[in-house]
Image (tube, rainbow, N blue to C red):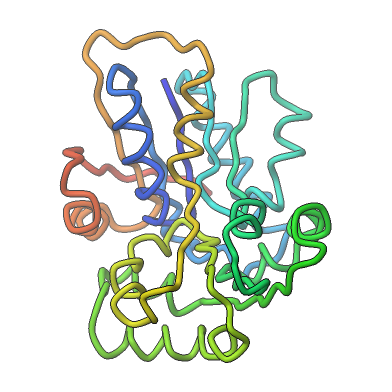
Length: 255
């Protein structure tokens, strides 16, 4: 079984890529909606929640765990890898591909506060974008909008304008979607921003990394979605965000 965890429904953008590439696998997805968003939480709280969700997935028989949350990856993945023998695959902003794509020498990073604070992000910039101008922007409203199922309209357009104004003024031509929630706003971003802007999203790359591991095929592959929030609300969001994935959402009770 493949375990996938996120602070909320953003990880559905990774889940759909994994399902498309590995249809013969059972997948258990946990959305920690009761604590969403992670991006503005303390590192201690993010690590505590990520470990609790990982422990549960391991107890359920996960052979591999995907931390489909940039904030949780930044804060917890190295400690998880040091403690547990199974593989952990995490998210990171696509600084390297963005640096390779830019024609103007300026890229924008749309991400969470926790991701942008992390040493891992600064190491990525130092390694792959040393000669590139990198403009960063926390986007808490993007997470809130996706968690509400609001993917277009005046509120979305206003948030896009707010978060990208500095990047556009600086002639950024590549924007990194540095949170798993943000790909669900990509159609709105593409409609709102100039046509030459290119976007980097690493969900498909994560699925390919999962596929590199030898996993036990399931007899009757299915997807289980669990949430620490309200199951009916998450089921409704799942149908809107990833209609190609049919899965029942059940509650998960964690302290």
